Structures are given as structure tokens and as C-alpha cells.
Length: 260
Image (tube, rainbow, N blue to C red; front, side, top):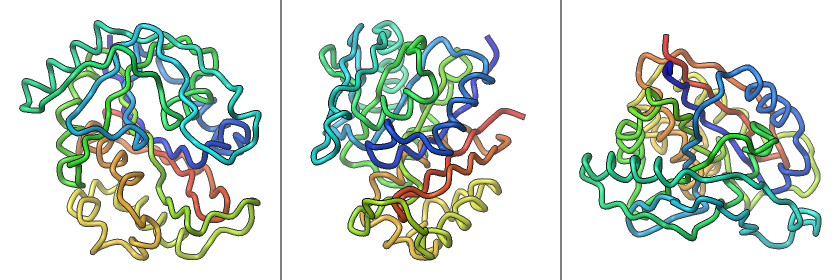
């Protein structure tokens, strides 16, 4: 099987499941045109553990790990199979790279995983394995984690980092309106840095990016971008999926990293 691309997805708010907008349409079209992977490996900031954990549940449940949203959201399901054999392969690969890694046989998929995957693969036909974000992860180690996972792309696995290109929930607007100026500034900076493979800038974003702390009051939703960039490699061709801005402050921009 030829090498799979690597994907960074901005999953925004849980309401993305009900309001696909431009970002959802882009993911749906992407899922139809990409070669079908044998499985998805997804990393989300909504599963943080002491060390790295990997789901080994053959039938992972849909976790509704959020509150205060429309009742319809809590009825949504994403029935998809897991792949315990792949989970074991991932754990072995990470252990060989020096990471303490455990298998979780009862864990389901959090909304950072199933919400965007409902748009990418709405039929749930591709098995999914989730890898947790360890609590010690920072920008440098996130990039290195992506590099450690990269060999799986050669084995037919679609590696996805699911976060948000901007994620300031303190300024969340219930209604979709005009985007905040600082969001536009940060997105333009990130797009240029990703396209030029500026590893130093992406790792040192707090010092290099405009409005970095306002765009990301905490780093958790930024780190999956670095996991994806690390897995994609410095020579990847980058495709920008401009999904616009949700709720005024949540950039829905995503990036596809493909081998040249």
C-alpha cells in the first residue's frame, strides 16, 4: 500500500457535528478523493493521560464529553470499529522510541475524534484507533511524537492530529459572526509557517506568532498541529483546507501533508 498522507483537522466546537459549514464540506470531499486507508490513528486534546495510551477497544463507544450544548448533540453516535492489532503495533512502535505506552481496551472516542471523522468518513467504514496526548507534551515533544508515529503512514494508516488552529473559548460567540482580527492574523502566520515547513517558528509559536496567547490561552488544541507536521515530514507538500472561522474565534483551517 502506498504511503498515506497526514492530516491536521480543526474540529472547533462540538456543534461542528451539527453545523458542518465549509469545513465539513471540505472534509467530506477530502474523504471521498483520498485513497482509503486501512485505519485512522487520531490524536485529540480531549484525551490527556499521564503517559501515552492507545485505544484497543474493538468497538469504541461515542463519548459525549461536553456540556451545555443542544440536546440533539448527545444523541449522535459514530459507530465505528477499532483495530486492536494496530493498537498493539502503535504501542510497540512508541515503546521502541522510548515512550511509556499502555493499551486501553475500554476507552471510546472523544468528540475531538468522532466529530470531525463524521464529516471525513460519514459511513464509519474506516477503523479508528486513538492515541492520547500525554500531560507532559509541549511543542518540541509533540513534533517528535509525530515523527515517531510517521512510519505508520507507510503501512496504510491515516495519521490525524485533531485540534483547532485558534481556540479561545473565553471569547466564544454563540452565534456565527464576523471573525476577530487577531484570529485572521494568527491564521495567516500559521499557514505561512506550515507551508514553508518553518519548524522553529511553529515550535516557538508563543514568541514568533502574532497574538499567540490570545489565539491559544492554553496549548492543548495547538499541539495536534505539531504532531501532524512532525508525522508529515519536512518535505511534504501542504494543501490548505480553508474552513473559515466558527463562532468568531475558532479557526476551522486544516492542513493535508502529502509526500512529494
